[in-house]
Amino acid sequence: MTRQQPPTYAAFTGLAVADAAVTGLVLKGSRAHEGMPTAHSDHDLYVVLADGAATDLTRFAGHRTHRTPALDLVVVTLAELRDAGMPGFERYPLARARVVLDRLGGDITRILAAKAHLGADEAFRDSGAWLDAYANSLYRSVKNARDGHALAARLDAADSIGFLLELLFALDRGPRPYNTYLEWELARYPLPGRDSGALLEAVGTIARTGDVPTQRRLFARVEAAARRAGHGAVLDAWGEDLTLMRPR
Image 1 (cartoon, rainbow, N blue to C red):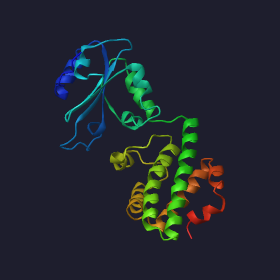
Image 2 (cartoon, one colour):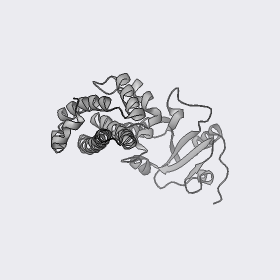
Image 3 (cartoon, rainbow, N blue to C red):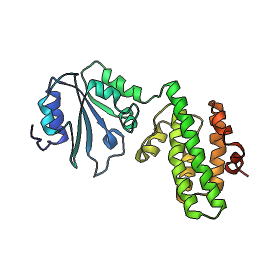
Image 4 (cartoon, rainbow, N blue to C red):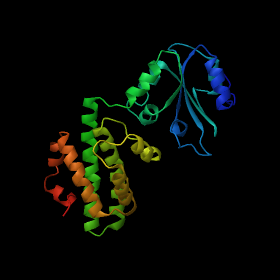
């Protein structure tokens, strides 16, 4: 089938609502985050079909995806929506997506809500891995700073921030938000026991400058939280190298 130019968001949703094969519409991205859309924001829309159903709406999406400056369409089955981002980079945007249409009595809403919470085993496994990756980049940054490799130290410090954020959200059994939505997320869903403002200030300083004392102070708080969560073995595996990461 030849792909046609998609209509506007409003026109397309009208067509989708009138199509019995469509069981749901899910809006994600900046349009689903209050206060985040800009003049450049498009509409990121998941079109959810009943399993095994067919729709003529795919004429707008080619091989079930299509992107224009105004409208980004992804056509999926209900089963594919359940699997999307589990795991994967789509987990956070779908977890915070807005349901435009749910013909399944709330099932689509529940599918999205489930993506916002990691299972206990998943969270423990992931946070252990992210903790080790964070410690590795932090150690390299501090060691490079000590040895006079300023650029390498800053690059490793910047790398460590991504691992740190993955870790902190995994400890809270949630997916890490995209950087675009980090401040938005922490303002509305702060991590338990953490000062969001202080955390953002610290990661901003580290990302900009690689400041070693800031890295060490932050690591001290993270180490305490990680040990409370049962990850002492991951940390202890670093042996005496921990002394280089801790505050002096």
